[in-house]
Image 1 (tube, one colour):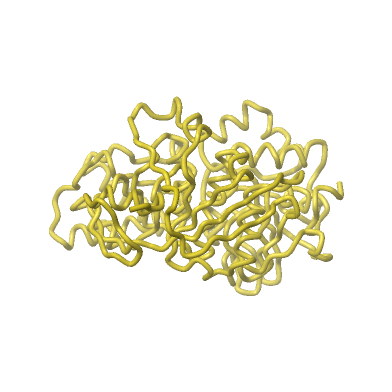
Image 2: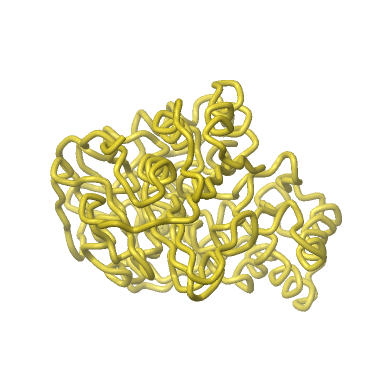
Length: 419
C-alpha cells in the first residue's frame, strides 16, 4: 500500500505495516519538547499521575525561552520548575540561559531532530521540525506528561495535502513569502488537522532555513504538521550536528493525497500579512502608506543566521527611522555568536537597533518589545492576532526579514526595492 511520508512514519512508530487517514493509533515518540510556559503544567500532571521516573531522560528536552531570561518573579518561578525537574530526573537536554535558544531553532541546530522521527512538543510551532523529514506536531501539556511517563502517545492519522511549488524566486522573496502566500490562499483553517507536504523544484532550491520557516507556519493554516521529504540539503545540514544514525522516510509514488495545490513562485513578490490574521496577506507593493513604530527581526520563524544576513544586507550603511524601534533577536546562542563573528551585530548597532539575547520575547507579547495602544509593528514572527504583541488596540504586520529591515529604515511598510 502506497503511503505518504507522514503515514509511513506513523505506521513505523506504531509497529504497523500501514495506516490510513482517520485511523487512531498508539505510537512511540522519539523526542518530547516543552518550554517555560507549557512544561510546568506537564510536570504538575506528571506528579499528579503518581509518576516517579521519566521513560527516557535522553529523549526529553526542556527549554526556557518564552519569558527567559526571567522577565519577572512569576517567570522566574516558572523557569525554576523546569530547572528543578531537570535536576531531579537528570534530564540530558535541559538548556539554561546562556546555552539556550528559541526551542524550534535550537533543536535542529543541535541535531536533536532527525528524519523519520516523531517529535511532540507542548508548543504549536513544534511543526517546524518537519522541515527535516520528521513528523513533528504540537500537543497539550497533559499529553506531554503522559509521553514523559510512557514514551508513547495516541494520534489520529491525518490526511495530507501536497503543495507543489515550481519556478524561480524573485530577489527578496523567501520561504516566508511562500508560506504567507499559501496561507493567504487557503486560509487559517485550509489545512485543518491535515499534514502539509511541501515539494517542487522551488522547494528543492530553498535553503534549510527557508524550509524551517515554511514548516514553522503550517500551524497558521491549521495544519497538524508541515513536512518535507529529506534530500541532500537535509543530510548536509545534519552532517556535523549529530552522530546518531537515522533512516530517512519518503512518500511513495502513488501515495494518496486529499488535495494537491500548485503554485508558480515566479509571480510571487514579498508578502505582508495584515492584522489580525496570517491569512490576511497582500503583496508588499499593495501595502499602501502604513507607518510603523516598531520592527522586530527574530523568532522561531525568522531568527536564524540566513535571516540576519538578509536583514544586515538591507541595513548596511543605513539607520532605522528615528520614529522606529528596531529590535533584532538572534534565535540561538549559536546564531548570536555567528552573527558576531560575521560582523552582522555591528551593522545592526550602526543601524541603531537593539540586539537581544535569544528569547521568544515580543512574539507572544512577553517582553523585549511590547506595543502600546495605537502602535503598529512589522515583524518576522508568525502570528498577528489581536493583542499578540501587546495592547489589544495595537497592530502587527508579518513579513520577511528584508521587508522588515526596509520598513524600519523608511518608517513605513516598504519593499527593499525602494531603497
